[in-house]
Each structure stands twice: as C-alpha cells, then as structure tokens.
Image (tube, rainbow, N blue to C red; front, side, top):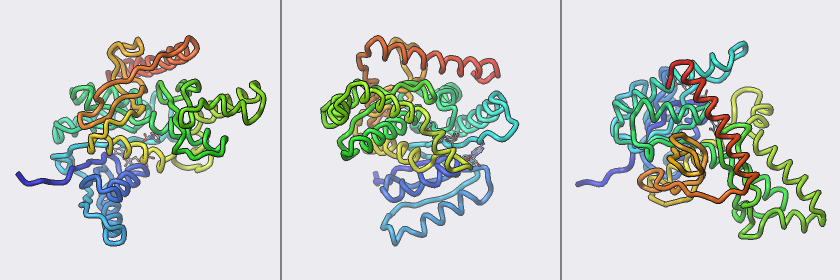
Amino acid sequence: MAFKRPKIALIGGGQIGGVLAQLSALRELGDVVMFDIVEDMPQGKTLDIGEASRVDGFDIELKGTNEYKGIEGSDVVIVTAGLPRKPGMSRDDLLTKNAGIMKQVAEGIRDYAPDSYVIVISNPLDAMVTLMKEVTGFPTNRVFGQAGVLDSSRFSSFIAWELGVSVKDVNALVLGGHGDTMVPLVRYANVNGAPVMELLERKYGDANKAKEVMDAIVERTRKAGGEVVGLLKTGSAFYSPASAAIAMTEALLRDQKRVLPVCAFLQGEYNVNDMYLGVPAIIGGDGVEKVVELSLNEEEGKMLDNSVEAVKKLLEDMKRLGFL
Ligand code: A3D
C-alpha cells in the first residue's frame, strides 16, 4: 500500500474558506479541494494559493471545484457555506436560507465523502451542526462544530492583553452555545496555574475593581464577533475562525488528543441529552473521542442552562421551519 497525503475538502470558498486553504497548505496538513457554487472562484483562489508553493515551500496540491464529485475520498470536510444576512431579511428568512444550503451540503458530503470527519463553522453554528448530523447520518464523533476554540482564544487573548503576559501561558475556556449566552469560565481561567482573578486582584489591589475588569472581559468575549463586524463593515471575522478550525483539523489528522472546546453531541454529559453544545472534548484521530466534564458551581450551571435553553429555541425554530 502506498502512503498518500490526507485530503481536506472545504465546502465554501469565501472569506474563511480562503484562509483555511492557505493555512492547510502552509502547515502541509493535506491536499485541499475547495468547493463553491460560484463558478471559477474556488479554482482561482486555490490556484493563487498554490502558486506560492515555491515561496512558502509546501508540497500540497490545491484544487477548486463546483462539483461534489471533487470531494471524493476526503478525510476531513470543513463547512463554511452560507449566506450573510441581507438588509430586510428576517431571522427566519436567514435561517431558512442557510438551513437549505446546509441540507444540500450535507447530502453532498454523505454521498461523496461518506467516511469523512466533518467540522462545521457556518452559523447559526449549533443548529447547522445538528442538521449536518441529521442529514449525513454520520456517527456523532465524526460531526462537530467550531466555535469554542475561537471564543476561548478571544477570551484568552483579552486576559493576556489585560495582564501583560504571554497568551501562550493563558488557559481560559468558554462553554455553551455560540452566541450571547456563551459561558466564559472565569473560575477556571489561569496563567500557568495561577488563577486569573487572583492576578487581577494583585494588579488592582481591590477585589471589586478586579471583578469589574473581568466582567468587562467576559462581556467583550461574548460580543467579540459583533465587535469585528462593526469594524469591518462588510463581512465577519475570518482569520481567527479559520485558525480555530485548523487547530481542530490538525488535532484530528495528527491524532493529537488535544482537549479543545468544540460543539459536540452530548448524551448525558453536563446533564444535557441528545443535543449539540460547546464543551471541552478530546480531539484525536477518531474525531470527538471523549467529552471532558468539568464540575460547575451553581452560578456556572445556571449560565450553562441558560445557554442550553437558547440552543433549544434555535432547534425549535429549525423544526418549525421543517428542517429537523
Ligand atoms: P463568505 O465569505 O460569505 O463565504 C461563504 C461562501 O459560501 C461563499 O463563497 C458562497 O458562495 C458559499 N456558498 C453559498 N451557498 C453555497 C452552497 N449551496 N454550497 C457551497 N457553497 C455555498 O462567509 P465567511 O467565509 O466569512 O463565513 C462563513 C460562515 O461562517 C458564515 O455562516 C459565518 O456566519 C460563519 N462564521 C462562524 C464563526 C464561528 O465561530 C462559528 C465565525 C465567523 C463566521
């Protein structure tokens, strides 16, 4: 048997899809095929990235396609297909459009890459991952979503910037759905083991001020996506979401057993049944290998319940619109 490079399919060749392709190549994670419905665009983007292969020094093949047949044999599929909200569009209109796209994408993956592991990034994330699982019928360890790696990276970055320490030494985790109800876990946040709240109290010499600063960091984390949108004016964050999904892809392809916050299917963990939610999980060669359970205090538990309710509402909307 000859060895061959892994194959990574990107469904959606927009802003995030482009960075995913470039990062996959720079890290030599595998050959890349980019699928999009826009004619010639994925071919052009992948050609452009591929033409830097000599400069960047990667032996990776990049292709663009407008046909699902092109994703045949893919080991990993990363999904960013979707439409942004347009003026005058209601929340239901947007959900109907994006769920329609996701259904189509899931059918393509089911038919042409039946053995693949699927990472969904498209919003509304928790609903789109659920639909992906329903339509493909893949086991839940092979269908998961990216949100928590990014939300946690944002939380960690804000803490590092506030404390003036290297972000490499910050460990901070965000649980829950990808939205305003996400749960940044302040009590577990630490700098190489030192609790962040203790460090803030030492910095300010005042527990109230430390709490105020942390509350602002938590709020900024919850609204970080909107902050970027507000500055960009058109489109949403794309570099950091792509980096986050690449960390997950690398953990999978290199069987790293990393503990990453991902949108995973819960069956009793965190007292949640048969539902996708953002939680830490071991990501290795078999996808979501195990959900890692943290003990939560009453306040954290309540915040997570609140997030679960928000995701449930989203799923009910999907049912009402005939998608689940
Ligand atoms: P964008 O640049 O618009 O790219 C989306 C691409 O999807 C476009 O190239 C479209 O042509 C393509 N597309 C549309 N319909 C189809 C279809 N039926 N099949 C295949 N491709 C199709 O968006 P983006 O790359 O900035 O964002 C992609 C998605 O990620 C959006 O849903 C965002 O809301 C979401 N997003 C999620 C996060 C998370 O952390 C969860 C962060 C940022 C963005």
